Image (cartoon, rainbow, N blue to C red; front, top):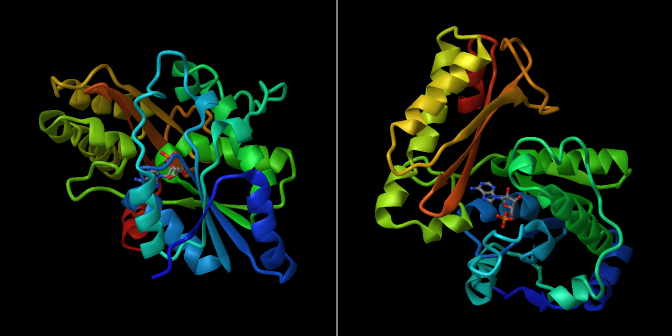
Length: 296
Ligand code: AMP
């Protein structure tokens, strides 16, 4: 097991990638904010299987945090991250300093409107502009063949896919299904901040998504009724704050009334124990499709 090369500066990363690029090796990029866990590693393993060189970026990007958000307390553990990356065959960990990424205030931002202002974008103004802009920077720095994003952050994945289409980035965007803990909770760096009682309560989110899937499988087609049932189930958990629950078309995030043949995604955010939990479930209205997907 060789440790990955830790690179701190943009210029050093470009230099390190120039030979493999010349040799025609493919480059897979996994952008992260660190404090890596099994969820991130699913992206890494996929990248490892599909590319000659795997780069994991670790950058807690200040521009995607609002003034009252958790930038200062976001968990960090570079040493642990390097060990995990070594165990999963990562070639390069790129962990730039804020000063190198943003030597001066940015005059340019990327706004994938209206995808960036709906849903979580309405709760976190500026968040997706920060995400799109830093992802575009990372794409220009690394120039990967493929880049890997989790479906857990479904809106983020949708924003990135749209940006890549709009701006003609020559990069394949690969979406990776959500990795869960044994009790169903989506793996997340922020879960580390939950008390044991809140950690237990947090399972209500995936159980509510199971309910949504079961309702549609049982013939319910009214998206409002499905959303209400999910809300009610989460409201039954006293430790949970008020959730947002939205059913949207999976490809475009546009609103749906009746669930038909087009896949829909149930998007949930719930404040719980000082953390904003996020989860999502894609559901197909066509009979038998969900079962077929799950066993595939
Ligand atoms: P983050 O470090 O939270 O910015 O996440 C970096 C990448 O890992 C994003 O593309 C996330 O969607 C993805 N990711 C985080 N948690 C999970 C998970 N539980 N399953 C799959 N992907 C995840």
